[in-house]
Image (cartoon, rainbow, N blue to C red):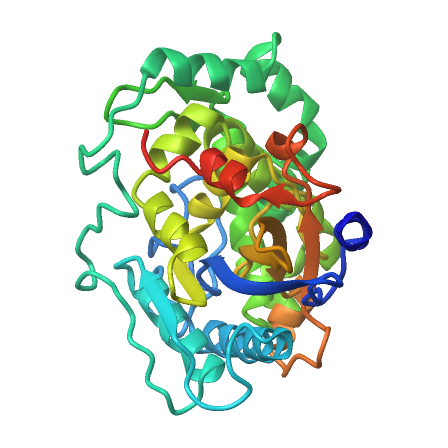
Amino acid sequence: MRRVLASAALALMAGTAHAAPAPEGLTVDRVVIVMRHGVRPPTKAQPMPAGVTPETWPSWPVEPGFLTPHGALAVERLGASDSAALRAQGVIPAKGCPTVRIVADSDQRTIETAKSWAKTFAPGCDLPSDHQPQGSKDPRFGPIEAGLVKLDAGLVDAAVAQGVGPGGMAAVEAAHRPLLTLADHILCKDGASASCGIGGEPSAIAPATSAKRPKMAGALDRASTVAQIMLLEYGEGKPMPQVGWGRVTPAQIAQLSALHALEFRLLARPYPVASANLSGLLPIMHEGLTGDTPVTMISGHDTNIANLGGLLDLHWQVPGLAQDDPAPGGAIVLERLKAKDGKLYVRASYRAQSLEQIRAATPLKPGAAYRATMAIPGCAAEQVNGLCPLDKALTLLGASH
């Protein structure tokens, strides 16, 4: 058994770009996929306040916030890739319709992402998706707003302040000044002025209340939005003259992605926020790791990914994006592995397309999707040669807040 688990540790430390096979002597028998929706337009018809840019924003083929046809196609590529990987691992049968639980938030983009993924994960099988009516509120994805769980505002604000650091938001803004300048160049062509740019309002964070998460405002908040819009425009496959009005490169989009990741690091990853905001989904993850259904897929948002990343202290970096920025269609994957002696373990990985793969939306060859195994630091004391015992993983994924 020691030799088997040593092999598992080597597999975990390696971090691969494909679905890792089960280490020798272990089999993967349960998989939970927590996935962000695919490419969408900005969620507002006017993506940013007037005065930020004199430019006309590019048009999109769907309503604000909806999954685009291109985004759906890119997600379909992931569904086919996931299916091939899980059939190769023996998690689902090599042929026929698999048993899969799909849970989606009630936004159009999450409902349609689940449909697009299922379409190619199990062609012709018409897998059901559990979701509330489109446009309604699903408390599983918004337990704080639904009043099902209350935040400890003091704990939340202290955790956020620790992430911000002793210099406050002014110091965070100063540290990101080169990226803010880049954002202003994209928005304003000749740089920020009195009538253009994002830096007119100092960066700040509104404190939490028992019913409301902390919220960023000012330059860094607007810069995070700019960064995400540029990434979505590029991922949609828009011609480069339409991406940032032709004033941004793919390399700069990756750099700007750090501003989006920063917002999540400060506001979504801190433990008191992450545990509360995930409290509606954690029971689904528990059941996925302990029940009879081989595959559970949750179609949600980047905030859900950031929450889970913060809860377990997971870190990743998808090609074309900054560290810990959730990619469109990207997912945190939790696998249960069973040893010959019956003992159960969990490993975590991040699965996504690179930004270039999202833009191309072409079929993914075997092993082409990005995948990297992630350490679970909370398991460090209890892990067995790199694998997290299931009981410990479930404790870290506390289902109750």
